Image 1 (cartoon, rainbow, N blue to C red):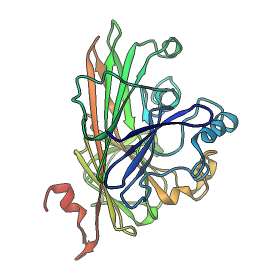
Image 2 (image 1 turned 30 degrees about the vertical axis):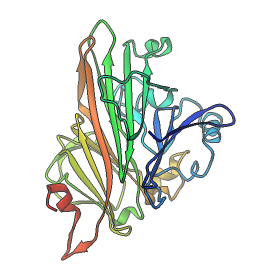
Image 3 (image 1 turned 180 degrees about the horizontal axis):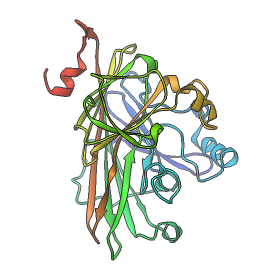
Length: 320
C-alpha cells in the first residue's frame, strides 16, 4: 500500500497516496479533506483557490486562521459536509466536519482490507465541544482509495448515541476545468431541482445537457448513479458514480460572487465547477448503533466531438 504520511514544519499531518501509473492524491487530516488529485501525467484534476494554490498547507491553515478567522474550510479539493449541508440548519455553513482535525482509523471494519490499493482510512468522533452545538454522539469514517484514473471515497456515519438522529451530507467536488463556458454536464436532464438562487423553488431541468453562462446553485433530486462532466477544451470527461447519495449539487459562483468571496480569486470561477454527491432533500435518519454508507467514485476518460455528439454519453448509458 503506497501511503506516505508527511509532517510539515509545524507538525500538521498530510497523507500522500501514489499509484504505480504515476497518479497521486493528497489528503489533510484537517477536515479529512482531499486537496489534490493528479493523473498519470501529473495534471491536477481538482480545483484549489488561486489564493491558496502553490502554498504549503501549514501556511494555508495559518492564512485561514489569520485572515478569515476559524473555523474556516479550505476552498477547493473535496470538503466533507456533515452533519449539515449549506445553511439548512442551525450549525455553521456545511457543518463542522470540514473544520476539525481527523485521525487515522485503525479499525475500519466491516469494510474489507484494501491490500494492494493505495488508500487511507480516517475517522472523526464527536467531542465534548461538538456535543455543545450538536448534541448527538457519532463516528464519521472516510476511506479514500486511489487507483489508475480513479479516486474513490466511501463515507460512513454511525450513531453511537442512545437516541435517533438525522443529518444531511455531501462530498463537495471542486473539479478543475479549462473554461466553465466550455463545460457541459449530462445525466441530469428532465430531473427536478431546487434553485438556491430562487429561494429553493423547485423546477424541472429542460435542457438536454447543462451548460454555463452565469451563476448556478442547484440541488438536483433523485439523480442517477452516473453523471458526466464534459470539458470540451481539455477533451476530458469526469465521470461521477455514486450510491447512497441521491442528490447532486451544482455550484459555480460566477464573476460577481467570486469577487465577494475572500478566499477565492476574482477569475477562479472560470476554472472550476462543483458537482457534489449529496443527501439533502430527505435527511438521513439513524437509530442508535445504525450505520449509513455513501459511495463516490470519480474517474476521467478522454472525450471528443463526433457528429455533434459527445462520446461521454456512451459512458453514461453503458455503450462501449
